[in-house]
Amino acid sequence: MQEATAERIRTWSRARRPLIDAVLIGLFCVLSAALGFSGIWSIFSLLDAGISPWWTLATALPGCIAVLMKRRFPMLSLVAAAILFTVDLLTIGGLGPVIILLDVLWTAAFLASPRARTGLLIASAIAVVVMFFGALALSDAAVPVAFLVAAQFGAFVGTDYWWAVAVSQANELAELHRQRADDAAAVAEREQAEAVRRERETMARELHDVVAGHVMAMAIRAEAALTSPPDPVTDRDALQAVRDAGLDAHGALRSMISVLRRGDGTLAPTPGWSDLEGIVDEARRAGLGIRFSSVDVSGVGGAAEQAVVRVVREALANGIRHASGADVDVVIDVAGSDVQVAVRSRGGVARASATHGGQGWGLQMLRERVEALGGAFAAGPESDGWSVAARVPVGVRA
Image (cartoon, rainbow, N blue to C red; front, side, top):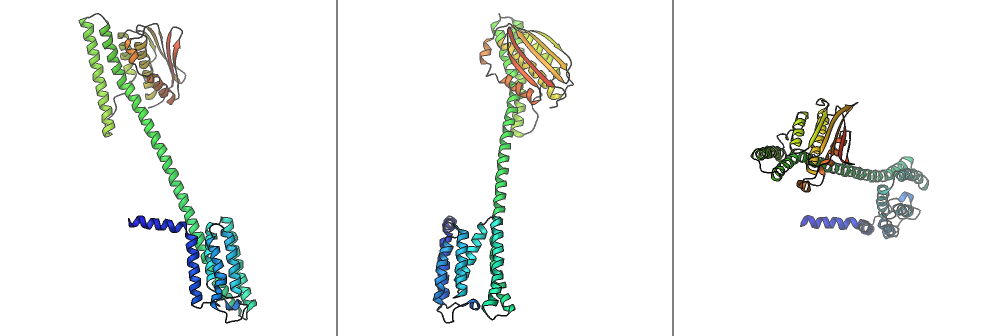
């Protein structure tokens, strides 16, 4: 509660700082007049001695208006304060006008641009020189006395100017660091969001590549067994295939959950060249008539090899769902610095499970994976079927 009250008081005082300064300086001027302070610049006075100290308020109180307007019109207020100080210097010689001059000079230097500050510094130096020669011209003071008067005035003005510039530059430096910190925080937030997005995409690809394929294989083999005439041998083979795919999916899920929960372990192995023959045989058992032609690409690079195998597997899985019984040509070749893979199907009919085949993310993720490796991917209908083609650069590592 006390901290909140103190903060409200600080906020209120900052918002009304010029008014508070003007009132306090006005009270100080009245007090100094009541105590008899006058004639402190007597060597410059053009009036006779014996003038009442209350006359110092004639220049001090109007100067409070300059204090009140110092933040809205800093340079204009400084000019007005300088004029009132000069009048007081040549007449009464009170404390108020010099306090007003220093206060308004501080605000003007604090708010000024670098070029304006240079002008204020030059003007202050000229004022010190004028004080020196004025002391010589308006009194019988010797050169050392005139020099002392000018040095005192220069010390007041110089310290006031230096303090204002130092505070202003410190604030500017703090603001610069704050902006840089805000920029760094914004960059870190964007990088974190991008990292989360990439991690989600990686998890989605792994789930699709490792788990979704096994689950869809289970559905396809079960449907094939249900739609075929009962046969103990083929039904048992189908059940065995469903069991094997379920165990594979379960193992892949366990490894992925272990990585996500504890950050340890490794994800289920990604498909490689050695898995390609089994993928093709599984598609043949599911009803596709496949003609397979390939060169050995097992040494082209981890990421490129995996991409080729995944293109073939996804294309054949789509063929099983959407073109059961189709004739499929699978061709893998090396052309220059690229591996080219093409899967073309003709004929076939869609299975009932195709209606539960998701939203077509598989081909989209394949496109993203191939393009991330610097390759090209295309998939679409042809006159008598469907075609999937990809070009993957050789030598790309995971």
